[in-house]
Amino acid sequence: GAGVSQSPRYKVAKRGQDVALRCDPISGHVSLFWYQQALGQGPEFLTYFQNEAQLDKSGLPSDRFFAERPEGSVSTLKIQRTQQEDSAVYLCASSLSGIQDEQYFGPGTRLTVT
Amino acid sequence: AQKVTQAQTEISVVEKEDVTLDCVYETRDTTYYLFWYKQPPSGELVFLIRRNSFDEQNEISGRYSWNFQKSTSSFNFTITASQVVDSAVYFCALSEAVIQGAQKLVFGQGTRLTINP
Image (cartoon, rainbow over the protein chains, first blue to last red):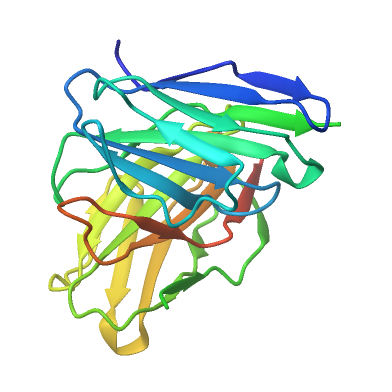
């Protein structure tokens, strides 16, 4: 595809439910990032993959958050036992590879936990 | 820790006015990158510019210009002759130490810019 795509665009979950958010990066992009953006705030780093390897997960707020990218392309961010504080927009970004490459962002998934 | 501060939460101007968005950063790294992104109502972050810490030349791209000053740790963004389509939230960001070749971005809180016709 032309850009990074994310699905679903909107997700409403009841507190305690598990959710899975999908990211399709730009084809051929090696690096993939997940960010969390609370209302009225800037995005905050969650985790980073280089191909299928998760090289940094220091931003994941708790062990309820889990991300994977098993074949080095599509990535899934899973949140178990959702809480109200998990309500945010989850942004995915990909870049070609190295430090000179800009990150291209998807439209995000807006998660609302009721 | 690295930090980006955008002190202006909201700015509202009339079309055709010039407007400057401020960005101040903190880092202990000697090598770093600074970015500006635009986030229109659709939500997708749009890359505007990347500047590395060794290049202090100002840059101009059409109606957009950027002023990078290491002495004051600032990377300000000016829109000349603003247009309604410039209305968006603008984020300044700083790359943290490189993790095996990739840039981990630290964002400011954003400035909501409204251009009124």
